[in-house]
Length: 368
Image (cartoon, rainbow, N blue to C red; front, side, top):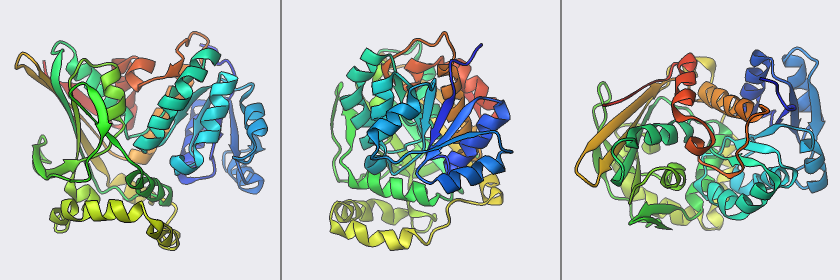
C-alpha cells in the first residue's frame, strides 16, 4: 500500500536512532533523518549509502519542528531522556497531524503525552503511540491477546525477565530519569501514585528461566493495558537481577531502591552525569547477540479462570528498531485512520503485529 509521505526519524544519530535508520533503509521506505547536528546527520546518511534527506532542527525551534513534520506521514522520536527532551517533537506532531511513535521507556513521559496531547492530536488526526520498543509494545499486545475470553479480570500481571542486556548511555539516562519522576500503579479500577516501598516477591517464569525474585516495575503497560483490557488491576514485575546487575546483588535491590529514588529526586542527580558520560554509546553486536528475554502475561478472571501468555526473544535493540519502524510504516499507509493517544493494542492488530516479530526471533504462545 502507498506510503503517504516520508517517515522522519528525530534523534537519528543516537545509537537506537541509527538502528532505526538502517531498518528503514532495509525496507526501502522513504525517510528524513533529523536531529541537532548537521555534521552527524551527514555522516549517517553516508553510512546508509547516500541519497537520504537530512534536516538539522533544534528542539527549541518549534516552528522548525512543525515545518519538518508538515509533509511527513509519521515521525519516530528517539531523542531521550524523553522527560527532558521528548515534548517538542510530540507537540509538533500533534499540531501538524503527523502520526507519532517513540522509543521511550519512561512512564512519566507517557503520562505527559496522554494528558497533554491526546485532545490536540484527536483534533489534528495524529495518532500518538509512545513506548514502541521492547519496552513495552510486546507486553501490551501480549496482555491484550491473553485477556481475551477471560475478561472481566480481577488482575492482569506482566512479568519481565531480560538476560544479558547492556544498556546504552541513552537508556541509562532515561532509566534514571524515570526513577526520579513520580510514577503510577493501576489498582481497584483506577490510577494512583506508586508507593516508594518496594516489596519483594517471586514469580514462576517458564523454563529455563524458572522461579525468580521480582520487584514492581513502573512499566508503560500500567497506563496502556487498562485502555483495552477489562481489569480491576494491572501489576508489572521485573527480575531483581535486572536492576542489580548480578544474581548475588539482587537481594539488595528492594532495600536500596527507596533511597535511590529519593536521591534521584534531589540535586544529587546532576552529580551522576559525568559518570554516565563514561559509558559506551551502545553495546557491541556480540554483546547484543547474547541477550534473551521472557515476558509473561497472566490474566486472572473474576470467575477464577487464569490464562497465561509467554513471549521470548533476543536482541532488544534490533527488536526496538523493527517495532518502531513497523509501527510507523503501518501508520504511513493511506488507510490508517486512528487518532489521539493510543495503546499499541488500540493502534494495531495485536496478533498481526506479534506475528510480524517472528522475523526478529520473537516467539509467543497464549494458552487456550
